[in-house]
Structures are given as structure tokens and as C-alpha cells.
Length: 259
Image (cartoon, rainbow, N blue to C red; front, side, top):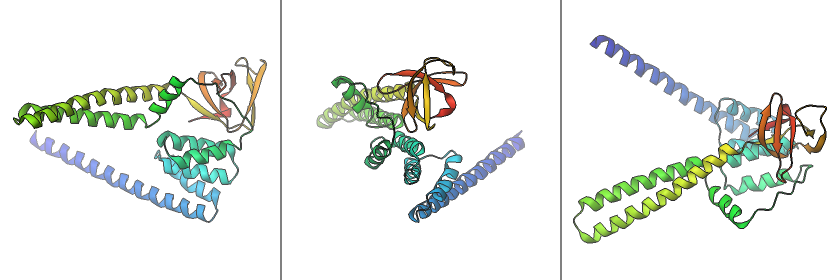
């Protein structure tokens, strides 16, 4: 029995070692591809740069820098939909990055559609501004940090005898508990918003938006490449979308790409 236990442990350690080596090798390969793409981009070889960076994307590795660079390359090739798509992807990972926001704005100005969003009240704007400060993962980490501070401060308060320090640790524990609940609420809110919204970008040069999920139905309006929509429902090969001004309609699923 002991032999089999040692043998199993050896196999597990060997597999873990192999997986670690593969992971390191893949990371190094991605670094090489990223640098290769950057070099090609500097030489204005934009399609070649895209080819290098897309190889990284195919491995499942993602980062704001990767998507931002892809957006820049597509923008320089005057490809509206892909540039907006990758800027939006970058913004999902780095919602407060000024460079991404600026370049996304430039790309959006090249769209045919100029859709005026429905007006929002002060409360809605404040709420959206608050939960867009950071991603769900960031708020989750902040919540864990406040929980650790709260517990540690309470333990120090409980065990330390000096009255001055006890008061300080008690206040710290209560304050961190209060901040914990705020960050937890923001994490929950951000998570719900991410899962509720299903944004997508129109990739077709032009697409007729139908009143029903069939070709013969009435065309209610038209959209063009680069326009951002939100997916409400999918039915067979059709997708029900809503745009910023509140209009809804069906379009072929193949004409858009989800973010």
C-alpha cells in the first residue's frame, strides 16, 4: 500500500512539473509573439502585427494591452468593426484606461450610425459611474482584503491589553466591516451588470433589422458595421437586439460578434 502511495505521489509530482514547464513555455512563446507584433506594428506592418497577436488570442490568453494593440492595428487598416470590437474588449479588462477610451472614441467616430442614447437621470448616472470604477474581480479582491483586515483588527482588539490600542483596533475593525459590505455590494452589482448585459458589435457592412425572426418580416431600421448593440434573445439563427436609443429588432446572428 505504501509503495502505491509513493508511486502515485511521484506521478502527480511529475505531471505537475510537466504542466508547469508547458505553462512557462507557452508564456515565453506569447511574450515573443507580443514583441514580434509590436515590432511589426512599429514598421507599419499592421496586418502582420495582427497575425502575431491573434496567435496569442487563440491560446486563450487575454489582456487589455493585447486587445488595445489589436484595436490600434485594425484602426490603422480602416477596419471599423474589428477596431471597435477590440477596444471594447480592452475596456472590459481596464475600464478606467484613458488611452483605450480615447482611441475607442476615435474609432466610434468612423461609424455610419450615430445613435443618441436615451437620457439617464442623476441616480442612474451616479450608479453606473460607481460600479464602473473597477471590474468584478477587483471588487472581489477588495472585499477579501477588508474581510482580512476586519478579522485581524478584531483579534488584536480582543487580545491586546492596552486601552488606547484596543480602541484603535476596534474602530479599524468596525470601519473595515462597513467598507467590506460596500465593496461586496459593488462586486455583486458589477457581477450582475456583466451577466445581464450581452453586448455585441455589428460586423456586417449593413444589416436590416427585422420586426420578426424571419427574412420576409418588416424592416424596422438599419444598422452598419461597428455599432454596439445589446443581445436580448437568440432564436435559431436570429438574434433580438436593442440599441442605445431603445429600439429593438431581429437580425441574423452571423452579422454580429459578442464581446
